[in-house]
Amino acid sequence: MRKDRRHQWVIGNWKMNGSLAVNAALFEALAAHRSSRGRVGVCVPTPYLTQGQRGLGASEIVLGAQDVSAHVDGAYTGQVCASMLREFGATLALVGHSERRQYNGETSIEVAAKARAALAGGVTPVICVGETLSDRETGAAEKTVAAQLAPCAELIRVTGVGLIFAYEPVWAIGTGKTASPQQAEAMHAFIRDEITRFSPDARDASILYGGSVKPGNARELFSQPNIDGGLIGGASLIASDFLAIVDAL
Ligand code: PGA
Image (cartoon, rainbow, N blue to C red):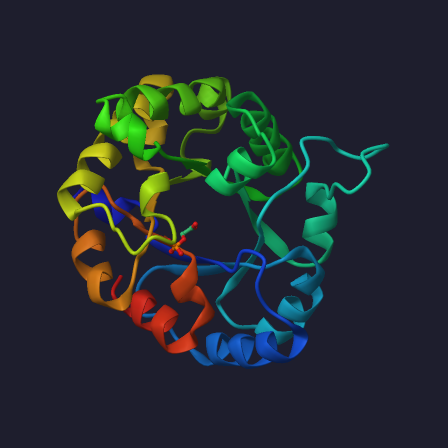
């Protein structure tokens, strides 16, 4: 079964939430958890990486950032490059989250450049794609996702299996509306076909689903043949919910 060959992941995306006091309890709960299956990551706001590095200690939880610069170093005020993230223990970085595409005007070309820079700096990019509600309603969902992936073609060709993808339909993020397992599975299968066209090795890349994943719907989503876990926003802020989702792997 192909799914056995792919890494199964649950990755939390705290977005712009937290404080030293609130995070301390969350890191402590995460660090104490033992996941029998799969890998677990948490992408925290950049100022809290040090706290995460200490708080997660020698636990199995992988620390990540929510963005990374497309550049190696230099005059890019406000940006943070992959080598800096590495120094604070982060080995994952989200790239192209829909909120960054929407509020920061990131294009798919920039997202691909960020993914490339992350990898070059030793950080695994989690490349986020997903259509809007109007794309879905007009039958353009696959076209949109294909266009978001296209600038990553060369990177996928040279990297193959070393990338993580996340399908997050914009209409399902933070809205309480989850894509049905069938809708999500259909898009995951499509993404897998697309990336496999760029590189046969990429067939075994992990593709996570994100968008209102909760303890109550995680198991059914994760049991789909092409869904390799989840990228979790709101529910990653509540330790018991996040860990229940981890256990659904
Ligand atoms: P949500 O967010 O789980 O709160 O819908 C997912 C995400 O944006 O990564």
